[in-house]
Length: 389
Image (cartoon, rainbow, N blue to C red; front, top):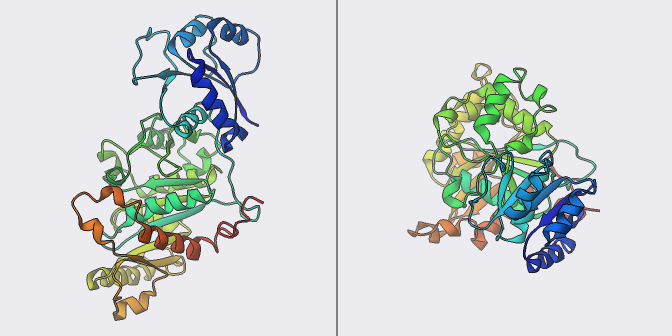
């Protein structure tokens, strides 16, 4: 059922393009907006007793309405500069939404206010969330670049995607501009999992409202947690903490795919990813050192005392990154049998290359092929065009 939202703004010309876009986009199935540009008609409607899921408007409308004591309904002020000059006491308990921004971003903020999530565009033959970990035995292998590109490509197919960064220092912000913080964040969620629900993610899945901690990554059309500012919090995140978090994301029922971007292979967080994720993408560099380390780590994982899952090889897929046209061969590479190859992009060696990491056609083509070869067997009908039938 669509959420009922009241929009109150002074400019009638602000309303028309927003409603036009709403009615001709997918948001029309999720939101029903009643719009007002006059305070008297707005107050009359709000006093009528009509059911409302959220109120969004200019400061003058919101303050007048709050005087009536109706603040039990979620509300937000449309702010032109990110600030407000209103009475802070009367505005306690609400949020602020940037008034002038792209219409998809604006409506995503309204959805978040209403705690409405997009329906999962998933085949009826598959009910579980796919947890996909991206790991590497050596540094600078391109895990984050692949994870962000995969998030974008999978979301473009209509899947509901969550990007989870478990690096000690989150490097994704270097490649993609971070959204404005509108949620409590991962630190608070971890605290609640530990303090409030000692049985972990399995017991908390039905009790924790995940939307309170999640923000929308509009550039990639997926969800994520804001990067942890104090990376000591990440250093103190244990393997059991990570398992609880992954279980919570899997059990929430909001996402088709959770892409997990990891740090060093020996970290507790990454070890938990090896255990819990159903698919592991190992990033390989086209050099002997990277291949040698990968083979040795997998040999270690095959021993019973290693603590690694016994099916580690079965759920592992290998991706060769930075591959040159001339190719690369070695005994280790033949043993690993890469399931995908991503090209070397010479432009990435330039000083100002960051904005190219999500916009390089050859790399995008490689990621799309990788998704089709590896994800399609796990999510039937995603790439065949019949997902929404």
